[in-house]
Amino acid sequence: MAKSVCGSSDLTDDHLNEHPVITPFTWFGLDVGGSLTKLVYFEPENIPDDDDQSSEIKKAIRIIHKYLSGNTAYGDSGVRDTHLEIKTQLGEYTGSMHFIRFPTAAMPAFIELAKSKNFPLLATTICATGGGAHKFSNEYETQLKMKLRKIDELSSLIRGIHYMESINHNESFYFTSPTIKEKCQKLNYNFVHPYPYLCVNMGSGVSILAVTGPKTFTRIGGTSIGGATFLGLCCALTGCNSFEEALELASQGDNAKCDKLVSDIYGGDYKKFGLPGHLVASSFGHMMDPEKSKAASKADLARSCLAMVTYNISSLARLNAEKQGIENVVFVGNFLRKNTLSMRLIAHAMDYWSNGSMKAIFLEHEGYFGAIGSLLELINPQYDDTSES
Image 1 (tube, helix red, strand yellow):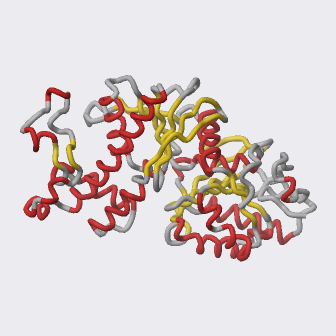
Image 2: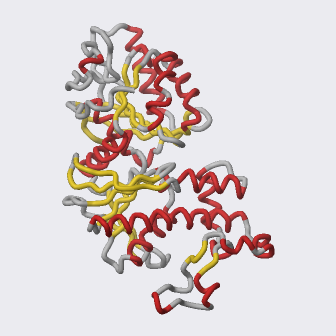
């Protein structure tokens, strides 16, 4: 009989859509994105000693628990976001939910790690979402002898959002006076009655969803200009090597050194249409001027990249929200990881261009909701239309 990742020994692939019999060991969900892989791992507080388990399996369980929860870094690029850890209950077990990320390019190293920790001894099926669940399916089957049960990424995303909202009363927040450093405040948002809302998922690219209920939503748009665009341009223009380095550069730069503003064209505000002079009229518009191009620093270039991507996403979000008649817009995704600067720019743009009728809402667990949804699908299967390759 095939074992699911929850360790149940009486489940075959034909039973994956039934409620599994959960036995406590390593439960996790995967979201394999275009740039970043997210892993959510549930660690029960007490692991009962099952007399039916062999000593080899018990040893493997202990090793995996110790490795995942006892470290904050894995290999060269894996990181556990300890500040996001949260206590919760899954099934009959209380424990901690851990959040781990690594570049999707490092997937071969992750597979080797899984081999070294004898994970295939404990499970034959993993719930996974994201494009990489399809891309790496063959590697998991041939190298690990494990099957990836593919969960629709948007369904996982929404399910993950609603679950975290139900267990964490401080999950949602918004900003007041976002462009005034001295006055800017981060405040909790009451998400008890959220529907309808727009969900803007900012990953490598961007998907925009209109959500009208716990399981009812429609993808209404998106753009290829997303987080990978920002990082890719920064790498090309500044020589940086990581998202964190690109954000640090952007925080020190001035995009007005690269971007052509309304005031550069009109000499001030364009009052007839209510366009302030500080508004960007053309991203990187100054770079056609040899002197200004030479004067722009790497930090200025990074800040211009960030502003261009952020404002474009904000504009699309606002237009789609207007079209749908929706006031609350939730922004999630790993582009926002440690990226308060973009959050504040988004908050300002949504408020300014909607004349205060729309609110930008952000969530603490940023880009982990797809992986959370995969973990929940393991515990309580709800979807049966995405299990095929």
